[in-house]
Length: 438
Image 1 (cartoon, rainbow, N blue to C red):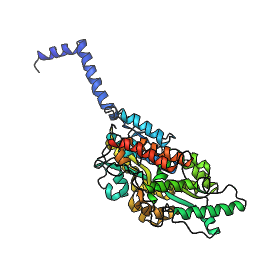
Image 2 (cartoon, one colour):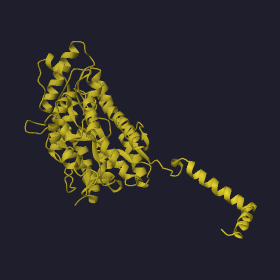
Image 3 (tube, rainbow, N blue to C red):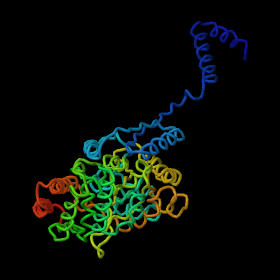
Image 4 (cartoon, rainbow, N blue to C red):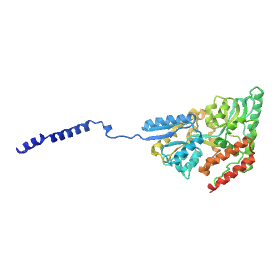
């Protein structure tokens, strides 16, 4: 620097604004070097909502597994567990999905709902490419609508018959194969026990309240007398047959004889409690009943045949998990679904006896088969399981089922004959069928 430049530099440095600028730049450099790195990038934690409103241990497992997953994945997870009936859940989900709301990401769907909600559910094939071989096939078949896989089975279920092993042994009776044999054994034990002072004992209880459970029972009666399907794959109504009439007449014959009038108000829990209190010889229920009735000496049977030439027919039940197509985080939701329907969670579900696993491979494991008496029967039951006509009737299914349970309930209450009920069901279903027929 020459002798003339030095005085100019000294002069500039002495000016107030230059001093201020220098101080500001220095402070900025110091702050940038000392500020925490975390403050530089603000990470937004994703939020997800799952409805774990399943009954019993299945609901507990859903909640516990989901919470552990959320901690691992650093997800802000909201878990709902409101005590709602299936009808109330259906109404709630219909409202949310119909509005295109992103409020709910993952939720349980009853066996009939994939077809009802098919327009609003996320396609899952890309997330579960091996679903067809990994899970029980009938559920994948049911949950696939128009070639789109819409739900993954979580807790599988099928109708079965529980019976008092101690009472059948006491009176030298063998487990029944047909409805006639069941009625005969039930009446015999009921009479003997009442004569011995057990006045409150009845032969057979099931779910006869006017709700979906009665439709499930009706389906089994009709199937056992080879009257299934009463709506075929082309949407044709075939309910006005002698087989359906025989099935209804058989059920009516139990009322007041081996079945108490109270069953007209029985849903699942009511029938379980009646049996648990030692008031029934036979109980038709789902596998989930085992956790509530296992303190009573109990065996498990296939649903009886209508005749020796009939078939053991069980209604397919259970719950699957689906993702709303309006979810803001479909990839995360699918990851949670994979965890809930994965090997660890499904093994836990099976070992508690509080549910039946959806993974086919688990039914080959001795520890699973020993966990609950119905597990060894599950594959036989599923081979003969009946699908409710939701895939063909779709959005109409809730109304179709209501028309069935309403008329069947009136028969059991002796408010109309089986013939009148069948005629009314046929007329109502035929009127609706113009929307389904292919």
